[in-house]
Every structure is written in C-alpha cells, then in structure tokens.
Length: 132
Image (cartoon, rainbow, N blue to C red; front, side):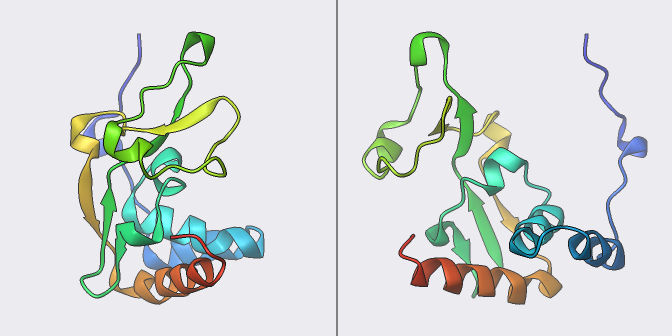
C-alpha cells in the first residue's frame, strides 16, 4: 500500500530556497534543478524535454513524453508520433521515451518568470550543441 501525502502536507520551495538549493549542486546541474523546481515536473519528464517543447515567448513547457522503464524482455511502448522522431542517441540503458505516467501528466506548464532567463540560457546552449 502506498501512502499519499494530503494537499496540506505538500510544501513548495520559495524562490530564495530554490536559488540556495541550486547553489549547492554541480554547476552543470543548476539549470536542470531550477527548471525542475520551478515547473514541478518529475525527473523523467524534465529530462525528456526537447528544445521544441519549450516556448520562451509564452513562458510554457509542453510535457508530452517521459523516460519510462523498459518492460520485460526489453519491451517498449513508444507512441507512433514519437517513434518517428527518436534517434539512437536518445536512448538510455533500461529506459525509453514514452508517454508520461498518467494522462493528466500530458500538459503545458507555465515557467515562473524568474526562471525564464535560466531556461532561455539552457535552450540556447543546447541548440548550439545540435539537439532540438
């Protein structure tokens, strides 16, 4: 049986707490941590984002895929639209890109205004590196 926290038990980091946490992780992980904290996305969702999922003009992130564990015998359930886009370099041992955990997880999330410059920096750096 899994115990779920009630809404009253949930506590979100403040802007200052988020900055303090980011200052205590490796430099190359700070932007990832900040985006994760600011959007509330799960690790498998935020690490599955592509540059095209982020709309800086409107300050939104579209969640339409997530890293999922492979099934028995290496089975994967990758949606058809995603199979056409995934390249061999977008693979991770024992995991594949697939649908988010629940239908509610497929959503568009607003980026906090103070996080847009961080996200913009990450997107421009990644785009220069050849990922889209």
